[in-house]
Length: 109
Length: 115
Image (cartoon, rainbow over all chains, first blue to last red; front, top):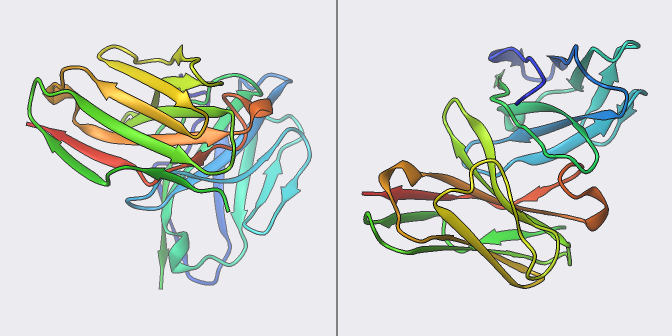
């Protein structure tokens, strides 16, 4: 079962930062936080993952709270192509992913 | 770039037919997966394979079987298609050391309709 809670939907203005929250209050010490997204009619795409420290790559930043009970995915300058469903997943490496239903992000022109 | 391809984007089959969904990856990944995606239910793992000729059941294997004769190819088989197997089917692959989690690369999906 999914161990995360995400808002069902969010809007963001084009060019602004999109901040997508995820609650994972029951996360254990060896579970990673992963983010994927799924653009309409495509397969999911890996974005980023982290354990304790904040992470950044060319797509996004991941901010994990100190107690690790929640995290935020940040898309620094959202574009229309970032409109997608975003999945937050917690998993131990080697264990199964549970994708849940994610957050539907709409970037508005 | 990693590429995972699926044999069809759209497929329509009749109840009782045997259905083959093919998936090919070109990155020499050891692990391959089949998921189905339904509205309100997210992605659910059907089967996965961590090596040639090896397979493991996921959460919903009933009504499905798989075949992995070559490292790059993973097939999902519906022995006798039923209407409740109408769904989007997604194939994915990953490197050996990440097995079921970590970075998985997905194909574009096959939307199967069983009538």
